[in-house]
Amino acid sequence: MRIGELAEAAGTTTKTLRFYEDQGLLPPAERTPAGYRAYTPEAVTRLDFVHRGQAAGLTLAQIKQILDIRDHGQAPCGHVRDLLDARLADIDRQITDLLALRVNVAALRDAAADPEPDTCSADEVCRYL
Image (cartoon, rainbow, N blue to C red; front, side, top):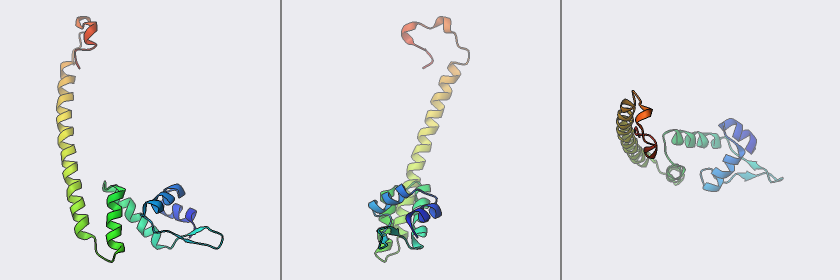
């Protein structure tokens, strides 16, 4: 299939496909005698994997590592598990940080529940922040 057909089938753009090819996420496409890229149906499956990896929060570099392992004939399951463990730890840190931020913003909002603008000095800008 040509690049436009693959882009449509994968729900992406031709520009993205060229980028993925440049980055090694897609193997170089065969070329027709006219120089057009010709992809195999397996490219759709590979792009689906890339999109699932991105949806899990993996970087394109991490996704490429997984694809490289598979392309060398090995199952990347252990590596994927390690990446997902690291991703979960990152998410847990972000949740902790967001909960602390929420407590801080809620306290600021509570302090500003009954604003008294007449008592604010101009050099403070706003005493509630």
